[in-house]
Image (tube, rainbow, N blue to C red; front, side):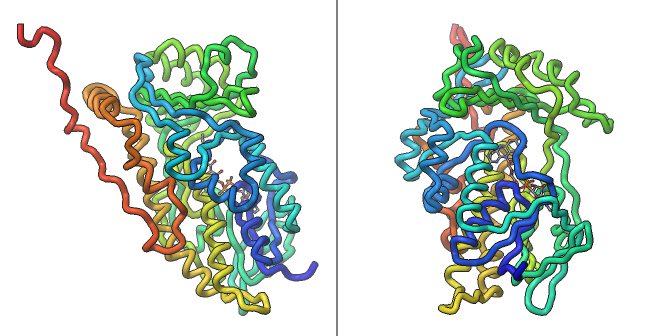
Length: 420
Ligand SMILES: Cc1cc2nc3c(=O)[nH]c(=O)nc-3n(C[C@H](O)[C@H](O)[C@H](O)COP(=O)(O)OP(=O)(O)OC[C@H]3O[C@@H](n4cnc5c(N)ncnc54)[C@H](O)[C@@H]3O)c2cc1C
């Protein structure tokens, strides 16, 4: 095998996205995946316009739209009483940002990126577990579990939440949120699906729990996600998030949510972790990308999107630092990536935490939240402009953040008969 220009470690959505982005810039890319076959577990994934814009640039959006669903609206409801709190008109949102909000099965998105990588000639290698990384004179080297080594000008570590490469840069551990996600899909034809508007992405927010649903594969499937805070995790027990906790966590929610629980897969569940933001992702010629750099909690649905954006940004900076003979000046390309992505992802990771806290409120804060959300103009985009616009290539392009609204600013209507 001749030496590639770039090695990408990890064949998840982030690694495949980066491998495609770099190969289309004319580089020879080798992707090393530890699993015996490429694939994704889980069900649906939401792709906001800051991702569909990139898929369009890659020439992959039409295929993604064919495989997924472009919903009409996103609705937030209170999980206890089922009432609507606020909504986004996703057709209007598409006009504002120029690209659709799309929901798609993870395996369809993964398959689409894998096929795109195959078409452009990424060298895809499975059964290749990287056990160490090191910088070399002219690039970087990885060693596999079997002792084999691979070298390239640059190594991109897209090795996920438990990244080995991250240890080169940061001495930290994943942070447990004590929340766990159950997923499941319901086939069209079952009464549950007929009772559901598949043109809506809906999140029911409740005390220490939430429930999400949307249609997949052109309406063939209803995707459901049930997330809750595990009492066993809070008590420090090792065996937490188990199915016995699921029904109890949603006992106080409305009928529609509770009726969805029997459809959740009970043989696997996802404990929710993130990490404190890391502001340095580049170590010589080794760079982090995707969840290895910035694993978020999933509340604003941007984890895979950030990973895909990372690859696109890197590709654009490579194009700007490539000589006529094809050689890349890696130091400025990596510096430009480092200059813009960590701060954007820090914003997403910290906002995801805050958004989750807001979803899971109880008591008076829940009522204050509901009052503020009900008062929101559905066509107010001040909370999405920082996220859904074009991905910044330089720090000056990064949009300003929104201004948070304090819960305490909620004013309640006077109780009925107050003046009597
Ligand atoms: C419940 C839930 C809902 C979510 N919803 C959304 C959503 O709606 N929208 C969104 O954008 N994001 C969402 N996310 C987040 C998203 O799934 C992740 O951020 C994204 O999949 C991360 O991709 P990645 O490629 O960086 O990492 P991973 O998917 O973890 O891929 C890492 C890859 O590296 C491989 N690997 C690891 N170590 C090695 C090694 N040593 N050698 C070789 N290979 C290795 C692994 O086998 C794996 O294939 C959600 C997450 C959860 C849990």
